[in-house]
Amino acid sequence: MGIRYEKDTILNWINEMGKFLRLVVGKWEGNVEELSESVDVESGYTEFFRQDRTRFLEWDNLQLEEFVSTLESEQVRPLAQLLMYDGLLSENRNLLEKARFLFELNMRNSGSFAFEDYGFLAKIDNKLKS
Image 1 (cartoon, rainbow, N blue to C red):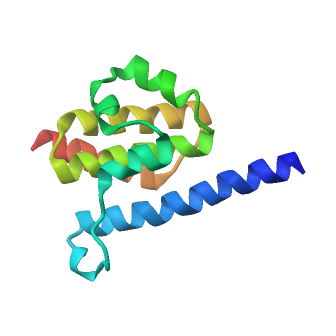
Image 2: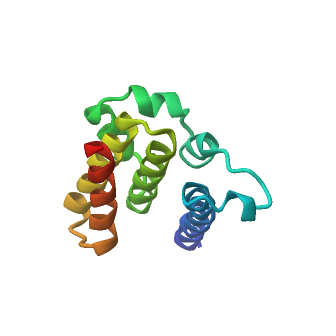
């Protein structure tokens, strides 16, 4: 029973985070008028990761890596996506660099290969170059 409960909890978290990220992506793509409510990107940090956005802005890569070591492995990639879209929306280079770091860390630690992640990295690099 305990294992099933924990599995259901992380699956629910992933579903809720996915819904939130779809709203954030919609905001970034300019589809805000289609949304029934405004998206507060900063609330994603506290709601899903129990940390203020300012913490993520202040942490260096080592502190960020220590934080993600406390997360479930399935939570690292959504955090990287949140940092990336927040960085794109706010044009914050610091957030974009941290997103890049987390995408690369997640790929190294998980051994996963996703074309979508390489697309995210390219999007980040293009924004950082401009």
